[in-house]
Amino acid sequence: MKIKSLLISVSAAVMLISTAFYFSGCNKLENMTTSSSKLVVDLITGKDLLGNEESTTVFSDVITTSGTVYNDAATATLSNEILDPNKTTGTFYQDIIVDQIDIEYSRSDRSDSQNLQGVDVPYSFSQKVNARVPTGETITLGFVLVQHVAKIESPLVEMIGFGQEHVLKLEAKITFHGKDIAGRRVEPAVGYISLWCANFGDED
Image 1 (cartoon, rainbow, N blue to C red):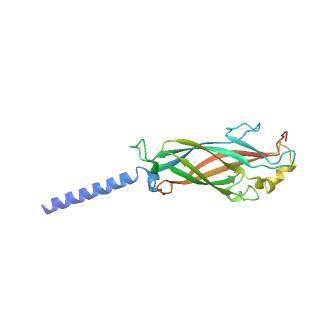
Image 2 (image 1 turned 90 degrees about the vertical axis):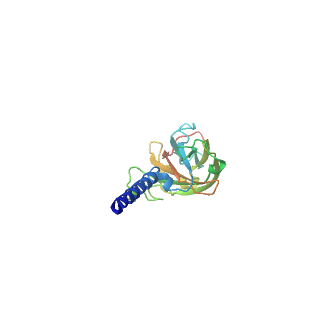
Image 3 (image 1 turned 180 degrees about the vertical axis):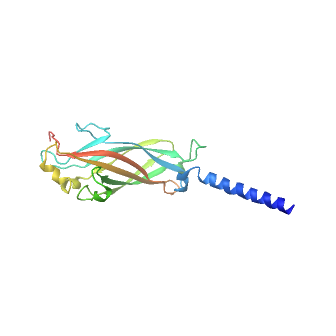
């Protein structure tokens, strides 16, 4: 009887451990954040070569014909999804406040070790924002993609001496940080957009 009881106890322990592993692996993201909300980057767009909005490739003019440099802006479409697949609605405590955006550049023709800031690519930077994304809803959020100061620094300043046939192609990595209304940080959401920089012809 003692052997039978021992076997039953061992079997029950094995089942308990297996169940724990199963549920802990159901959603890896839940193990990376204490929030029950997930911030999602649905779309990132900017201006095309003609100045039209909603382009998935941004064309950055490094200087106008009058010698002026401008910031290049972009727009992100962000949504707030509930992590629990059994819930379709949430409370306002699960709303997300986006509070910071990080911009980082890279070049596909360079290895990671060769993407030197201020040499191969512009310097990365961060900007503080305050935008609320309600649970289950979507918002659009504008932000600076290229700072005007980057256009008077390497490598963009070197583009001024060339025409629009000389294009520097960059990839911009945009990371959105935030927290839910309860104060719990959410997993950062990352999106990408292509950025083509040159001394493009313009009427200004």
